[in-house]
Amino acid sequence: MARANSLYALSDRPPRSKREMYMNSIARILAATDLSDNSMAALHTSVLLAELYQAELHVVTVVPARQGNTEDLLGKARKTIEVRAADELAKLCARLKKSPVNVQTRVVTGEVVPTVLQLAHDLKIDLTVAGTRGMGSKDLGSIGGVAERLAHAAATDVLLVRPDHSDLFNHICVAVDFSELSVMALKRAAEIARLMKVKELKLLHVLHLPDEYWLTGLSEKESLAKLSGFARQHMQEAVAGAGLKSLQTVECYEEGKPAETLARMAVANKADLLVMGSHGGTAASSAVVGSVAAKTIRAIPASLWIETDPKFKLGFLRALGKLMGLVND
Figure 1 (cartoon, rainbow, N blue to C red):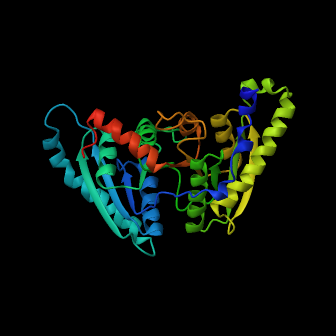
Figure 2: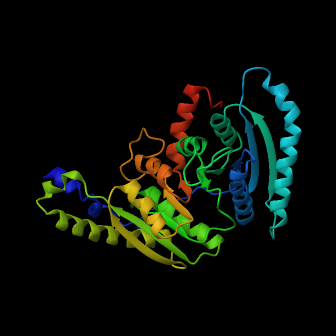
Figure 3: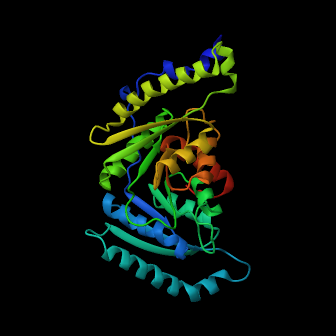
């Protein structure tokens, strides 16, 4: 029966090694910071990444617009903010062996997320970096509203950095569901690992048994065994397609609900960075961030790199941005 066969559509996919997959290049990085203590780890990480990628670094502080003459108020504070941003960058760059290619700072007024999105578009940014929590946030283990909205809406890759992170990432995990975007995420994780001299990658796959598994005529145990076999086969193909020969890989499988299980696996593997695609194999074309990614953003207790598909997100978001008046051609 067709519906039953669709539960195991993985077995019909061609090997990933035969597909050409291209990541976004990282030549321009945008660090969005409110200069709070919680945001310093993200700023530090963006400077390190700019050094490793030899990328341009653009640092922006957005002062939220309020009633009254905001620009007059900003004019008085702008110099103070710019001086602090410059001081923090100078301290961070002094620790590096090789400074980033180019560093620019900006202080602007407006709504934080739309302003950052517009700036990322105007500057042709490849990676947007922000802290998971901003000014005044005491819950360091969860994602703040601004960070979550950036992750949902950015047309770039997004890196959300925990406030308690320091220096390089040492325990990198990547979520793999065998979609094209997850293979791109796998390649990105390998690239980051090599740049940061991490020798091992943990590959996380959630075995999610659809509610309709009984339509196959198999028991739950038999269905899980078959699904597990397909997953291991396709993991080998994904690893081969991503070119991970120089890295040690550890495959981790667990059954459960994708987002919750992925977060649990990240904790069990002591991940300080989880790399994942913004969409999985079943994401609807109208979603900017797939449902699993969206739930994982809220649940994950590690820094999170979200790999985007530039063809999909740029096309969708430019159309949406025009309707909302956020994007000007």
